[in-house]
Image 1 (cartoon, rainbow, N blue to C red):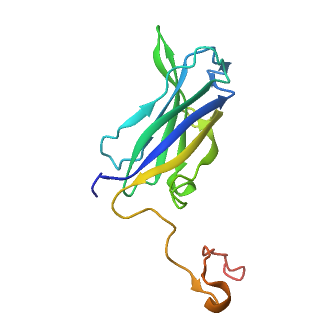
Image 2: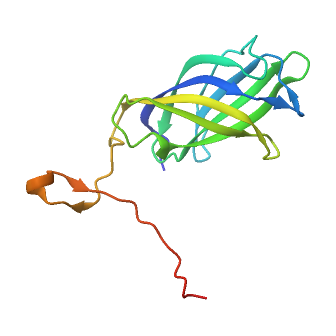
Length: 172
């Protein structure tokens, strides 16, 4: 699959909550990187400036521009802490499903919050972001064209739904 951008995103890293390293609240210098799921290919990413004063509740309010390759399923948001002695340390990672924001009109702003997981997979704070699709190339990532036709004379549209599988309670 080609790693060509299908759309451009504006991701605003707003803030973090209850960030810790080894169970201790972070004192300062937390920053965010955001990159697209790239199917094994190198991925460009954006990064905020470290928050010097936010402690374990940093505030960035910084816009990052990320190219989303066609076929990407999620964005990866990482919160790290910059230290002169230990270098950059991972605080937590959040996988942000593309389906949470891609099937809406261009320039629609989504405010989203995700639980961060540390390197061992344990809960480690929350990241608050906003996402906006600013441009798309090729086939537009718009609302998918599926559904059951409605009474067109009255509704002038289509009824859509998501198939849901319910287990048969009579199966063993």
